[in-house]
Amino acid sequence: MREDSALSKSYPAPRKCRTGNDRRMSLKIVTCLILLALSALTAGQAEEVDTKAAAELRAGIEESPKLPFAGVAFAARPPTIGWESGAVSWVAVDGRGNIYEIQRGDKADPVLVLDTEGKILRSWGKGDYKIPHSIRIDPAGDVWTVDAGSPTVIKYSPLGEKLMTLIVGEQPDNGSPFAGTTDIALDLTDISTLQMATAMRESWNTLPMARG
Image (cartoon, rainbow, N blue to C red; front, side):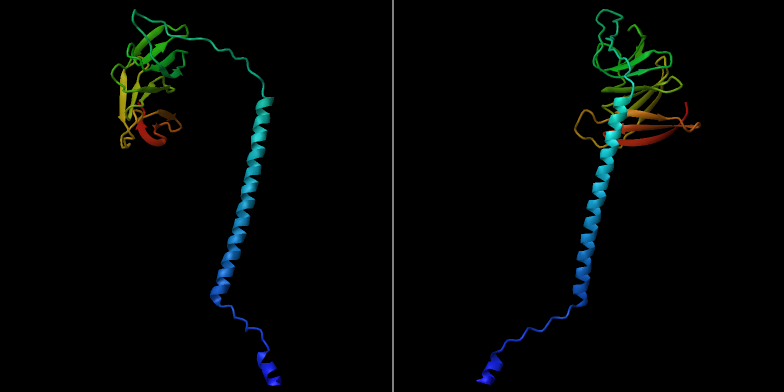
């Protein structure tokens, strides 16, 4: 009976030794947990900084002086019978206070130059655009325009003489009529060159050009 009791007595299973692979796996798990904790902490700190910055900006806006502003209706005065401006997509003002509009109607030239009373001083650009879109004036007074329906940038003199035509190109057709140039930015920090950026469907291309 004693021998049977000894044989039936249970003993704990032998402990399995941890291999190098087990230790490496444990280390990887611990490392991942630490990285996740640090990431969460960093995200929380960034959110706190953003919230504080937004609050400071709102406070600054509220404390800034309120400037008087009154909207004034402004419209071009038709120079001839049947003349009519279409939708004006962009406006720029030169150093003399003249107003440059680029418009999309077919009963007037795309580029209109007006005085502050709405009188048409001059106009040009018929046939140069598919979708006239934006217009800017550089410090020399030259006029830069872009065509939203093609990759075209046109530079004019203040009197409407065409000085330069740039075809940006290399832009895939997205099936939309707005598949061309949308805006330009002039960089005059370099005296010897003029850097022009053309925005085409959310991408920017920088083109170095000799100053005209």
